[in-house]
Length: 176
Image (cartoon, rainbow, N blue to C red; front, top):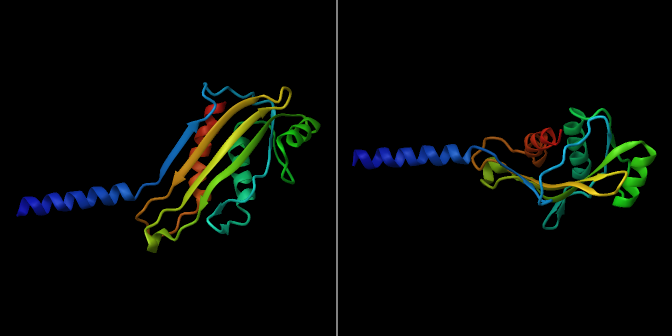
């Protein structure tokens, strides 16, 4: 009986610890090794459409993602610019050329779920796709998916934005 209680206690502790950690995944979608970026070339970041889940749109999430991407790139690139409006890839490349940027970074929000995890037990989630285009050739340099899920057991709410910072910083660091 004592052994069974210890085993049950150990299993509860393990499940609590596993539920207390956020999960991240960065996946290369290009199928090849990620190219190295030139830190002397400027970065032009487009603003994605706001994220949505079911019928709810998270107003301002597109700007949040663009700012987070800019913050990650600004630690490595000499110049980082954020678009003032949403663009097609062709418009973004033309704007980047006018600003003498070397790369266009196109983030797209695939999933953006803000949950009240502290009382619901449902984790917040985010998933974005980041495509990097060479301004001169228009070729795709990198395409990556960055995903995050908050811990299941939490005393506070975790935002999709906070899930974005760590894996995004790791991904961008790997580009330079």
